[in-house]
Image (cartoon, rainbow, N blue to C red; front, side, top):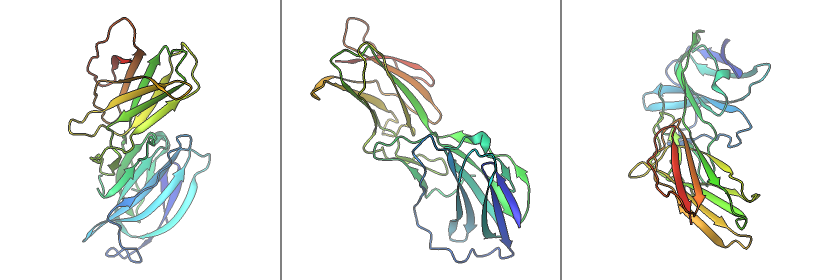
Length: 276
């Protein structure tokens, strides 16, 4: 029995000499959809083992791990001896993940977030492993999500509810890091209801990169009174989101002052847009 250490847990291989066929595996689904938690308070990752067969890559084994923990978990399973593509993806902090034993992989495996749900911080790392051998390797981690901070300046007393919508972001990403060219429908949104007059709350969004004919996203903000009547609304300038990007946007209620809006750049601050 060979052991494969993956920081958050210990994966134990049972190896056979059969390197040709996997055997006893269901027919591969052309689109294998992985379920990841959308609760960012739970650190978890999925560890996947892919085997290249004559008819294409096959997902041989999938292990869910949570952490960090004081003591590693043990997951016991058997796979035929041979080379595998090992992929780790999830919202577990990457410094807790280490490989013992073992780059891109099957583009028909999709991580998808729809229905207005924000994805958690999504990390991706991959490497190769040979079952039956023990070798320490490194694996670089990329973050696939963008962060947008929207500050709403000086909320007036009559505003009781604010709805902010992030439009034109991708609904998912394949494990080869190709972004799915479909927008999330409905788009990601957040609502504020416990508002204090004169305060300037900040709404934090997480999303996959922009997707549209122009690869741009934008924010729509609507403000309502206690009777749910629309009082103010506004739309930001279009901006492009790419992986691992931080953007700050602010909006203000109509008043005397500057109304210009400047283009956005990576890790930049976008000037005000108006709510009127």
